[in-house]
Length: 454
Image 1: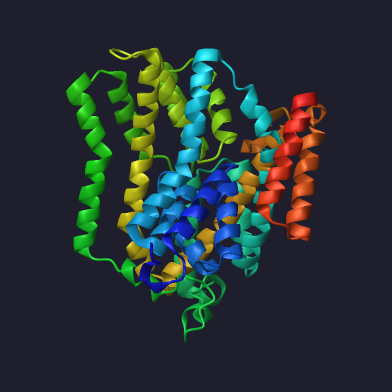
Image 2: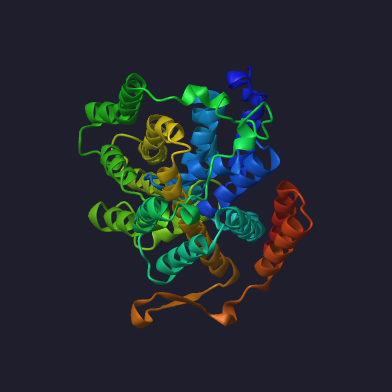
């Protein structure tokens, strides 16, 4: 297939890169954003730093997995709707297949040891990728002491005081808007990079000329809204007609459709809500099983919100109705995944043209600059959280003076993941080696260690 809008990237070249991104999308949003940044900005140079951050900040404001939505956004910029569909579906597909297999093993055989061994070293290496991303994005986004201060406040707020992610992002946007009005020099940081888009001297593939197809219109907006609302709810209508409103598949579809519009801040922000409803209200899971599902989502590629697929599988497996349990479980996985991720495409295809149209608006860019600074703090929070959970087997929580402290139990320090992560970081950051061989070697080392000493 020919490139979109006369740029040099063919659809099939992009397809191969999205497969690569999908297979490496470990470590939650911080790791996934780090992978995309390294591949799309640093290696391929398909998208500039400013455009990447501009898109990321919009995705951060949306419900749902921001990394998957960022993939949809950039895929759409490259190859329009088809490009966004492919990027978004591929981002989810490896995780969906992995968790489906693991859910079957869990329900039928109660075995998840194989995946733990396989991803033992990979998780440690992804930690190195996340830390590298904090440094790389921080260097570009934290241009002055105001941005550094906002990033630090965001980190302290979310890590020590458990301030909700949407509050941090919305507060940062408001501060940036006001700051851009009264102190533009310090707040207008993320600017459209003129050198990349002028005079035929493009340094990146996606320029404003290439992205001309992104211009918004009311007619387009209504078409997108109608098509994606129909796609979102049609399976539910079919299930209600065939099975009635009380069947578990219908209940899962309705419940996770609601969850899809309130999942701001990623999986952890809604985990307690989903666990409470799934365990206490609906009886789909037993107490503690949500953590098993989260472990699957953490150790397989794809967004952490894929934990809902595990919930959907077990809920339908244990309440199969007219189906055999395995068929019901698979259908539960499908409907749960469908209603969770279909809205993500709606948010991007509907809103991204307007976000692109406003590139270069100084007040919007000032708001996005402060959001980016806050995001650096949030990603650092995720990196620290990920580090503590990978390197230590046990953590204690303490709450002095209204703070939340994660205190590692030093007797549970795990030297093997620490050594793998440190080695991967050194090779990536100091010796500038490719991410694929580093992750592959780390996986093999981790698998060998886990097989003999894990």
